[in-house]
Length: 462
Image (cartoon, rainbow, N blue to C red):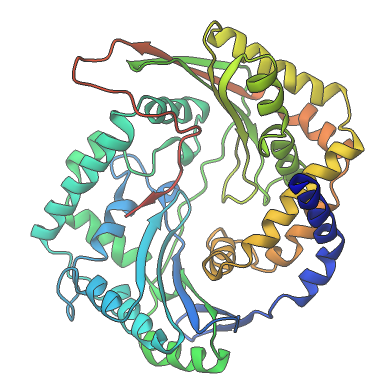
């Protein structure tokens, strides 16, 4: 009965989606003379807000020898300015009943404060100060660099699936900077100096390379006035993004084997796939997102239903794709074989699933169920102020128009079975494929394997 009621609710939501989109709060936009872009999305359901600053800088901007520098700089943003002592930022936010954090991805670095709506000026005062006035002391740098090294050891070097994912991406991409880990290669972290950080900070942490997003119980004109007061005096910087390293056409399947201490083997498969900015047809990224949900959209999706519970070839398996990235990416599959089955069995089962998508159009009823589920999830996400702000900031940081967020649901709703079959045939092509296998090695007596986590992460949080 509960499942039936849920399906009915999702169906109602699906038919109401155009009304939901039209009723969404209006986004107000302004740009200061120094280039800072400001987006404000009022939402008066509760007296709270999220204030986010998005810098167009991440690991995909880095070059060999300094990988990981964007993430290290994120850590240093909490270690003092000319006005505030180290960790003073976090203390002030906490004393005002708020929470704050930051995260670094391949294409951006973002900082946020979630506060009561009458505390916005506190966020602006703190963020504007550290945008141009970090002290970047040698002592604090040495300490935070060791924190990052330890983070790398725990999250990558000592985690066999994450380690496999890191080596997999380094092989999958020939030229794209996506081949470098967000947290950086160990050798680059070892040779990093505070002078490198100072240059990186001066170049990229400027108002004309940032977007300020505020969502919540706010008046747009008051937000703009406060932004002018605190960010307006900051000077712009001459920002010259690096030339894009175009990924050459892949000319055949790649394979690698990673030997690491682990209890279970692990399989990763990735097909080169376009991002929303470089797809041949504008509908292709949306069709790929629906395709990923057909395979891995919950317990009723094909991989869970047919490979985990049905044939029991896999103990876990998944698929993922993201349309929103600065550069072309990958359509990913991963999994752990069930007892009695090996990596070859799981790989063949996944290839069979792909072949089915290429030869048989998705049934209309299955597509309706999956599409309704995906779109309803996107609508529900709008309940969270943080997500509303994140959606706007992420698009702008990727060099895309924030208005894409308004059309996103409608574009997903328009995907057809023929389009899903077309992208499966075009992009899930063996010549675009890279396969990585984790070959488990004996664990040390005092070592335990971490629980499987699925596909490797692309973002590092402080």
